[in-house]
Image (tube, rainbow, N blue to C red; front, side, top):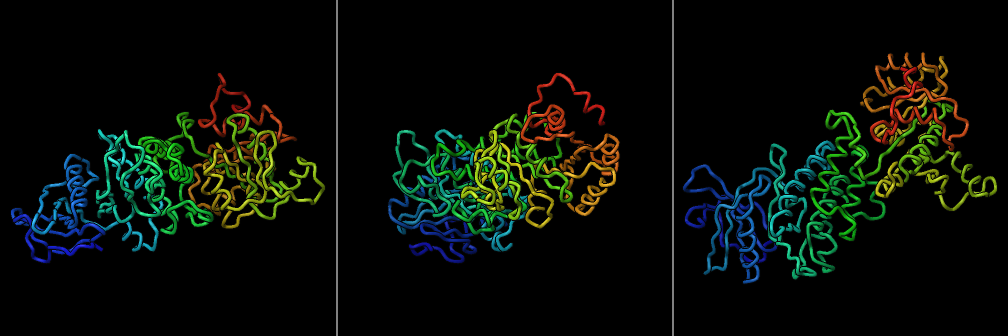
Length: 497
């Protein structure tokens, strides 16, 4: 609440023009009212009143001067500013933004904001941050949080309350005033350095994490992975993790950089933009997820996941292969061989390495979310043949969902059955692999599924080793994401079409 008593009440007239209608909100240094314009009947304004000592007056004057100089559709427009020396009050008259705060919206939806709105929301906030940060001198907002964002009926976001914003001064080592909201303010706002554009980007990361966890978390702490909503786009997680790095030099360095990252990632998701993947997606700096799901036990899911992982490691490095089912034994047996331990003697570490691929055995979904914030270029999930909710969710969210089914003629319908059982889910980005399938089986399955990305995998006895024919198939499967240096298409692939 505002510490000083207000000089206004219902019906009060400010500046001989603005009649107070009601209170909109209050904070530690100010109170905001709705007012009607006596000279423009029907026009409503927001009037911000601050009553305090000389230091606060200086802050309010600075805010007014700053806002008057700004012009952006996501910022309130300042139309008047005046002081009342007898009472020590100053008044800032600005656009009245119809709508509710993001915090109120979140409460109304029990902490839930539709997942399809989160990336557009982030881009809207980044748009105004980019505008502020590229002013001369740059304007640092310093208090990005749900109560300072208004959501209009058209689902547009407006940034309000510039009470602690400041212009960046390159000659300062740290801020003279430590202000910000706990949980959303960057570490340097508490005295460890001067705030700059990267401080606002930290706050954006905190805000996105808040939205992605239903309002439960705004800081990346132990256990937060378990609260991140399962249906969110994969690429958001590494972006949020980078925004929330403790040291500014480890974060994104500008709003424009984050915008570029989100747009490249969204372009990679055909459902978001309705476009095809192309070679530009190689600019992506985040983590791609390949999820390998077997249609039935013994269909070759683990064998295929291993082959895919080592193929990706040869092409792009930095690959993790994750065994995402707690009862599986394949990785444990492999680890015994790699580390030379006795049969049944489990290692204390669930991670081991084979030819540059990091294997993670019996891993949980929370662990996968943690890995997404790391430096891996690709994470391959070995889902086995189970279809429990957790594994199915990971399959559906993956960048490359890969179904593995038997190539035997009499088992092809198993794949069709799986696709039909999940037909309520979008399947445009699914890929299908059939070990040892004939070209006729591939042709029939493509026709029955009305889907081009169906491939036969040739015999490959050792998935750790390179095989030219297998690489040709995987080149086709990952075309546009792994650079294709071939001069022409291979005849092997032509024969399959």
